[in-house]
Length: 321
Ligand SMILES: [Zn+2]
Image (cartoon, rainbow, N blue to C red):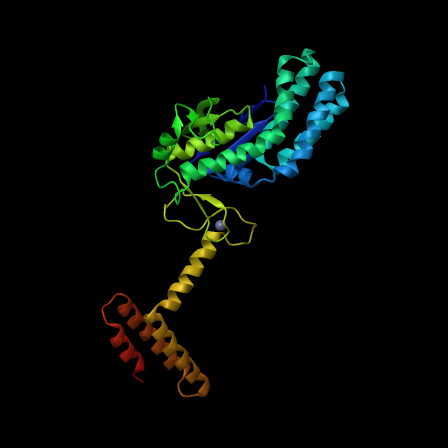
């Protein structure tokens, strides 16, 4: 029996998919930082996915209606392509792959299950952008730390009546297939066995509320990021191409540079440092003298930073030959 699993472990999320159902040996295993799958789904270009989804539906119809096995294979190829574009879409591939194989054995082509799968495939081009809008709305009303505040539990309770959203454009929660099992040596966790893409979205959103995790738009790249650490974090740590800095690393450096250039203690120190450095070239002092001075100057700067001496005292010291 095929399976798809999704679970959260500390600050990461894990996906395992297998069309043959070999527990422990999944054909697909992916790890992301917490919430990355949902955030990248939110950024996905549904217009780009639409032609593939439509074609998969048309080919699957040919298989169901006319027993066109070639068309069935073409569906799987398109679903495989979609699965490589986003991890949520890989669910379609394993599910349809398994059904294709089983159909050959059980000879029940056109069953109720097939009708439901066909309808699901047909609805996806409209459904995916709708999910995106509902998630966006959920961010606005519940998770966005700058708009909705720091308490997602409070906001979620205010926006739902039982499991129905008060605002019809907000995401609707449904029962999801959740199990519980060891996921790492010595550690058990709830594990989602998703049947539909909405199950994975649902589980991600409710997990944010349960864990009190808010989201914010990054000050550098403008994309959403989850605040798994400090709630004051302004820069994301979302994955970047290898060798590049994350926004948080770049942001920390910019802030440091800005702080340094605004700091009068650092300014006074740098001015004198430059002046004396130039003296080496002019032959007025030796290298050794310069290094000895700069060592002392750093000590004095530390004292000034800690307010052991005042800025004026530090400047006086710097001005001495
Ligand atoms: Zn960023």
